[in-house]
Image (cartoon, rainbow, N blue to C red; front, side, top):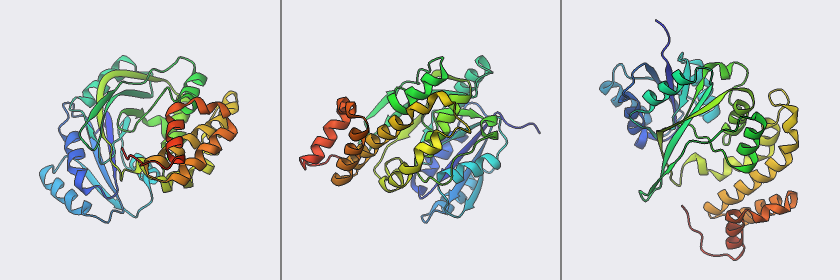
Length: 306
């Protein structure tokens, strides 16, 4: 049999309570030329039980693997090895695809057969139910400018679930397994620097934000930040012309860690990472959203967790 057009990989770590929503968002797609693989990354909750129940409901709908806990990068890499689709989508277990996501992405592929990454819009849903539509990013023609917009200027945002990537992207580089957080940053930077990327205007995924999400895991992010710039700016994968951005990227990442610490209620880390960013690039003081949070932390005001 020929491989399917899409492979959807759902890494799952202690998300038994949302796994059914994620799985049914795939099995209910209007476009059916796809395979689904759920990988339990050593969960300690009822993920196995939920998966068994889903297997009864959808006997031909998906495959299920269980591994020892090794982190999202290793789990995605296993998903790459264990699937065969021409294009891959990594859907977080707490998110859900829009019902026409695969149909819309298929149309995007047909219109842009040379593209290796196609990004669409997503809807961000807050814990209180409020939501906001985030439009697909706008990619400059220049690959150097794309990298700068993504890593430093924050004019390009890419999210797993809202992008589809061709399998050939992973021939030379896989997700860096030494990171338990931020592992998608060097991967997306690598893609922007070396492959053709396009967008579709359609809504692809609903991203559910919540406090215990790995996106807001301060501990993993703090452990990752020291080696992240070296990984992202490796000359084995990235053009020499962008190396002048490395220090600025590291400073920008300190700002991101400051914000993350603020949201987690960690006043000392918020101030520490903000100072580190300003010591490298004093003009970052004009990035007002970060400065406001650092000032609130400094004044020991009541933190608000979003």
